[in-house]
Amino acid sequence: MASQDILVSEVGPRDGLQSIKPILSTAAKKAWIDAEAAAGVREIEVGSFVPAKLLPQLADTAEIVAHARTIPGLIVAVLVPNAKGAEAAIAAGAHKLTLPLSVSETHSLANLRRTHEQVLAEAKQIADLVKAEPEETRPHFEGSLSTVFGCTLEGAIPDAQIARLAEALMAAGCDEVGLSDTTGYADPRAVKHLIQLVRGVVGEKALTGIHLHNTRGLGLANALMALECGLTTLDASLGGLGGCPFAPGASGNIVTEDLVFMLESMGYSTGIDIGKLLAVRQILRENLPTEPLYGFTPDAGLPLGWRTAQ
Ligand code: ZN
Image 1 (cartoon, rainbow, N blue to C red):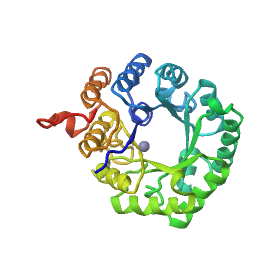
Image 2 (image 1 turned 180 degrees about the vertical axis):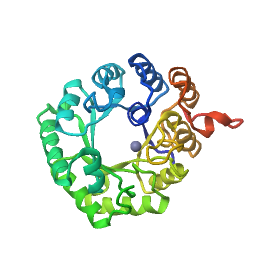
Image 3 (image 1 turned 60 degrees about the horizontal axis):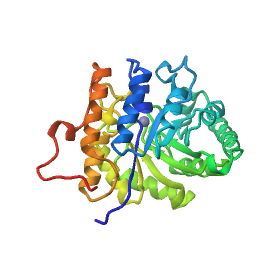
Image 4 (image 1 turned 30 degrees about the vertical axis):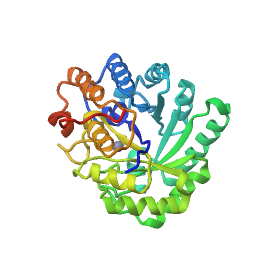
């Protein structure tokens, strides 16, 4: 297979941390981000601009963004739940903003207390804030279609509804949309189907990334299908940190170490030094001693003769 550049987006400092109880110190978060960037990770979702009282774990997001911005070449991504969060994210200097829109309206109401129309209105406001920034420093704005592979409250979501919402996010002013398997329901066939469905509505350039969980062990199979369909950005979390609120005992996002191992073994270029990446786990082990860390590659080690494609 021809070498191709794949962007592995580390989401552990946001998605991983937001679903665990022990608070990771600001210093440890900075050390984690520094070490991953030094291993060659080029994009990190470092936090979320939600009210501190709702999510104390991520209360230091502005400080973390300011720190991450000092790392040359690193794309500093954040989650924003609404326009107010986007304002704070832009003020802090984030390079990429992601607004989740749950395609299940029941889930949207339960989690954000907002209807689809209300979330789309926030998307429009965020797009206006983004466009008011000078072009050189304007952040990238993604609308993430969450629960797109199915919802714990509604089950499967009709294709027509997904297509309509993808189109509406672009019409609101998003630069692109993403697919998010919030609930760990995805399988490779569904991945292919949804990529084709959404690209059919927004075009190829406006869907480049996918956010996968490994809840039922299909994470890498789903990632492989996404690659074969032409997606180039894959979210993952170091050590699969985070677990799943819907499936006690299950791992969280796909494991960054295993994903990088698969990609580099296949001849894709990620720019990541896997040896250095594996060493970053020590920071989590020391600072979050009660949290399980997942991953097969870290346990098994690299095969004899294996080398990074650098
Ligand atoms: Zn997630």
